[in-house]
Image (tube, rainbow, N blue to C red; front, side, top):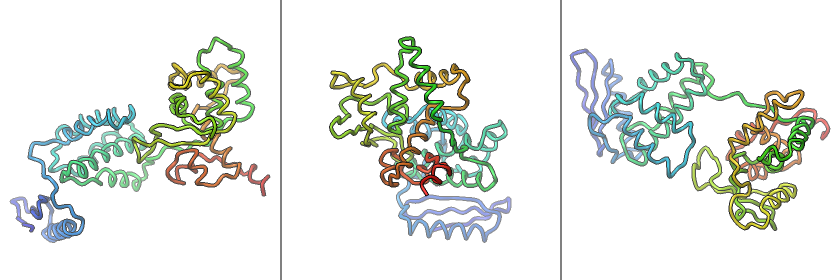
Length: 344
């Protein structure tokens, strides 16, 4: 049941204790207080939130963030998320879990924006914070709104701040690829990284660079022309997201050559994906004339676009690219009107 008490300030304090759930809030009018109490009680009855834990006073959000961060060895997220968690822990070190609300989040986002952070950066922090809140609510059964960060991000969008990065449509031309392969061939043994072969795999498979560098010989099926990609990147499945994809004959031939007589281990020995990315960028700058604004990841756009031009179906394209939704897949399909004009 709920209890509404008028405070000396004239505001109204609501306290709800129902089926193990303990919630409280303060409002400027009794009508608002009663409406909020009715909504919360209805939610408790309908959504099965009974049994949530109200943490003791003096428990701060930074403690939840730090506890969530300890999951990293199991989930294996990236450096950006790790850095975000560290910053969030510092920012919310004095924010009590019991009273944590949108005001705390808004003060943090205002601080980021004032410091010059872009909407994409702010959205990244909110996404990480949302993961913490959902984990605390659903896994630890802590009485905290799991959608606070999600709602804060929606508020940013409605205020006109762009929270998504600009979609790239850059893909390499035939002349640019030809110049790159010629450049690497001319370097010979001076380049220890097999740039030409790794680039060929990217163009022929649409795999990410880290996926290519991490391929294992034992995950290749030479007969069926398939390869297993372990723990493939996904916005929803952070681990145990192994996927088998088909490969072209050209890609299989390159992988076979690097595997040689070995039956296990990494196909591209001692090759770090960050080193490959840096070498690719440097090569683009060394060519005369230099290739402007081309990233290795643009090869994934190039490959998916080429597969789309072969009239593969959406399910077939998603099997190759690993995208969970069409919305994400279409960002990589840089189809040109001139190509479609030839078909029609």
